[in-house]
Image (cartoon, rainbow, N blue to C red; front, side):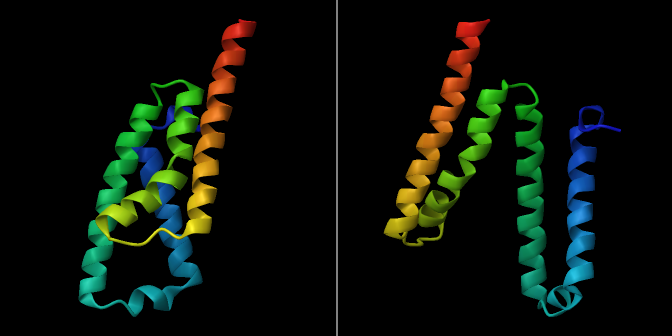
Length: 121
């Protein structure tokens, strides 16, 4: 069975189930040490992330490879920016420069792929 034949929800459920099994196999005490508040937050974050992944995966199925790669690659750039805005975390100078280069590189790779494809086809 290939990824393209799985429904988006089934694919993500399988992916996260494998991750949960691996986590429990490798670090079973990590989950056991969590307090009730930590477990609640973990479930809330997991559900939020799962919904976001479901929406993103569904949308990316209907976009070109260059747009899909760009959106996925921009996680490197936007995750710390969101942490800075929402959690009020300070962005360190060196990693910020790396993220800017990663974003620029992702944009260049995706743009050049689209331009070269248009030119050759």
